[in-house]
Amino acid sequence: MKTLSLFSAEGRMMYWSLRRYMFNTVAMVAVLFLIFMGMFWGVKTIGGSGVTGESLDSMLVGYILWVSAMLALGNTGGEILTESQRGTLEQLYLSPLGAHRIFFFRALVNILFNFIIMTIMLYLSMAATGRWLSVNLLYLYGMVFLSTLSLVGISFMMGGLGLIHKKISSINGILSFGLIGLMLLPTYPLTPYAFLPFIAGAAAVRNSIVQGASFPIWWYLFIAGNSIFYVALGLAVFKRMETKAKRLNKMNQY
Amino acid sequence: MPQNCIQVRNLIKTYADLTAVNRISFDVRSGEILGILGPNGSGKTTTLKSILGLIEFDEGSIEVNGLPIKKQRSEILKNVGAVLEGARNIYWHLTPMENLTYFAGIRGIPKKNISERAKYLLESLELSDVANKEIRQFSSGMKQKCALACAFIHNPSILLLDEPTLGLDVEITRTIMDWLVNVVEKEGKTILITSHNMDFVETICERILIIRKGEIISHETVKSLKEKFARKHFILDLKTEPHQAFLEAISSLGTVSAHGSSLRIELETVNYLIPLMKAVGETQTDMLDFRSVENDLEDIFLEVIKEKTE
Image (cartoon, rainbow over all chains, first blue to last red; front, side, top):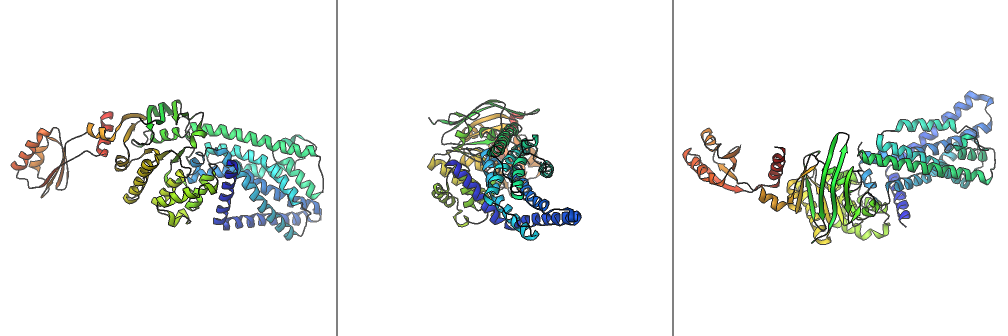
């Protein structure tokens, strides 16, 4: 019951904030779309006839996944920074449910919101490029949810660092762009890269949408296990940093 | 005998080579308003945040409602509310009602359970008319009242307030003061408050702690503190500014400070009243009014700080 109240409080907060800052949300989607179109036409122009339809499809799906990953990755760190700047961070720490739960549910709400952004981006991009993919949205949402959870874990680690060091946007930038390269690495069947966060899930989504590939159940369980591991690790690091921030009285200093 | 609902024992908190709080011990009784006074950097906020578990203290113990903060913080927080950064503690892009709903939600209280409480808080703090307007449009006083309402939404028995009237005008300060006194008297709440506003503290607090450099230098009721530091202060209103001969004649009787044609005199002993009057006559000073005044809390605070510094 309490968890449900917390989840709906975060849902409401997201809705109120979106309503107040609607322009910003629309602008974000527009910028992401323009970046994709720039990349798409750039690759098509430079690559010429060497660029196959499959690689363009792969790029489209990859970009959508990367946007989702980027939004999930910057979530908790960004939220802590914003709350700290506002002066509301300590109020969140006065919740008997714990600030880590608040930020976790906020991250979940954000992932769900990102589905809307992802869907808009996907259909806008398909319409603009003329490359219509057969997308099972339920599979896409499920897999993206499962794999971006691991990035929520990483985001918690960043949030922990944010509690102590406040400004961590440069690390966020490096991780976000690093992900582009990492997403191209082979993961199936079980390479060492598959143990990195998000990558195995992203590859599974890309291959199933673009090539129609299917995977055994153990692979999905592995992806789920990977996410659970990173969420647990992220929360552990976050709690440790939280204790350190309390010892140094850095909780609300910005 | 009222129960202690906050018990602080030998609290120590250091940051690198700075001792912010040094072996502080005190109790807050159920149903009282305890004030903490002290100069900037004296350790007031560190003490408050330690009680809330927002700062990890080095040594000592803190119990709230009989529960240790280090082990049962979550349980304690169910019954505690706080305003720490004044009006910055709430979301300015939301309305008061949205803030109340959100802060209840993150405490696990569903929206349907808070409507009566939210209505009562908004009404009692005169915010009903603006309940659905964005807070960023409000004055500092209204924002502060919203922060108070949010800290009270879960109906806590204990409220911790850090400088609740900082930067507010007299009228709003009075409203907040009355509201706090009311919740203590009618709802039996307990309040621990830090403030620089001496009138505010003097009016609403029964007992006060004075902290300096992380140590408690006074812990008494306002009444006993005033009695202890009772001084004979007199105000002498003259027709014109005092002339030199008069000032010289009374300089040995005590401390004299002149503000235009008004003199504030603190006599070393009341026996000096006769020489004072004699000096008025001998120097042919035209006196309009003469009255004795009590030391206010600000004088006492400065005196306690000065006494402990010497």
